[in-house]
Length: 112
Image (cartoon, rainbow, N blue to C red; front, side):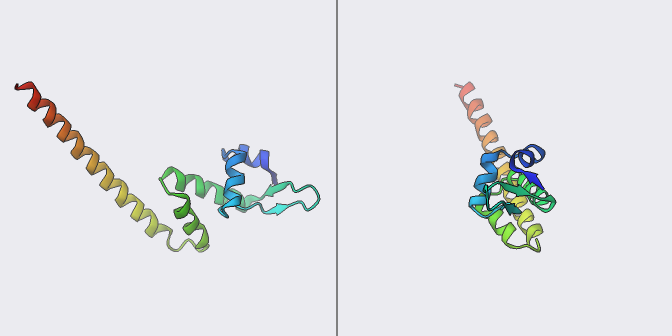
């Protein structure tokens, strides 16, 4: 079992993020000591924390991350990742289009 500070160190998540994730039901401690209310995490928590870090890096919202965590079998994870991938590809295409428009606008101003 890891104390909060130890778990924060090994995962790279801040104590505040861990507290928030517990509040919203994303990553709850494996054990809370009833006497002193200290929170402890286990190896299973570590796996979930790494998954949450990856999902956040991929641009998942808290709501999307909650959806993944509710589906404990992770059956829909691939579909959600594919959906996120398509969204990112579309955003890249939109940004490239804007770059082309900017370049054309700059070029049109040079002729005057």
